Amino acid sequence: MLNREENDNRIKAIWTDIQLRVKTDANALDVFCHHWQSEELVHCANCSSDEIKRALGEREGECGNCGVAWWITSGTVLARASLFKGYLAGALFFEEGLTISGPEFSRLTDIPQTSAYNILRKLRMAICNQMPDNTREFSGQIVKLLIAKRTRETPANCHPFAEQELIDEGQLADNESEVDVLKCEIDGAETAETATEENLSDYEKVKKIVHSLLSKVGLTADTISLKTGFPIGRVTASLSELELFGEARVEPGGKYFKTTALSQSHTDIDESIAEQITDAINTFVGFIVEYFHRVGRKGIQTYVAALWCAIDREHWGKNSMLRLCGEHPPVPYRVIRDYVSPPLLKIMVG
Image (cartoon, rainbow, N blue to C red; front, side, top):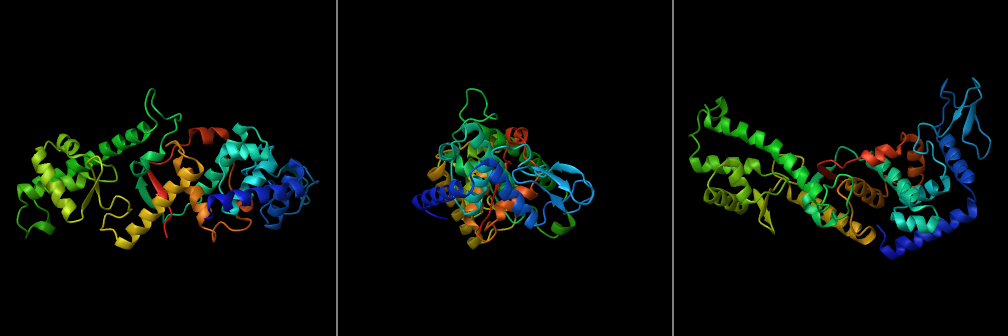
């Protein structure tokens, strides 16, 4: 990923080139349509033929096989769009691994700020939807200092981070039911697997339940004591032992996390993977502070995806965004408006 000065200089150079080569929105539409047809992405909506006739500057195409006419941009990211030059600029910036904020994009392209924001949001969401299954998960608690912009999800008269706290409460409720089940298993008859083992001592029972309650959501000893009904002394002793043996970690503020909090696996996390995840999250924090200062919890996942696009030059190389704009289904405003980042954020590592 380029440093800020190189990033901004490259953006200016690309926009200057666009201004010279692409005079109007109609010309920009031609760039998209030409690329889509060369990649065989355009087919007749009626008979699926790729023999399409289209006049320059027009979004309407006519099938050379059956004669049916339809808008070529239908069913794509550019459905109902009109500011094609802005979409072209945004797509080229992303596929070059460059980053730009909404206000800067608006000033550069002379597009109204709301439209500029929506163009970038659509492109980020399209990228976000391409994130593969081999992502790692982490809690928004870890990047809480970045969550400082109000969104539609922010409770009235609350700090924007309250969104994350509500998510944590929801995850806690889910986790509590698992703990109740575990209590029953421990206190009930032993299973065939543990029939030959000695019964767990009271101390071991407490420690096992405390460990099961820990997750990607940070909890204080007081909270765990309230949730389980265990004396605070027993909880503190269990947490200290779990921390000593690397099964839990504590952060400033006294919140404890399971050491597997950043992994999708419940097994012990490999040290090198943990390092990669930490590095990835630190990179994300620097990325947001550098280009966006702070963000809202609601759309934070799309910014994680934007970082992936900026870093992974092998996946997001030349023409990747032009192609994505033709392959990805429409992203209407209501989808942008209603989108909420998942409880556990996904990040690419390695």
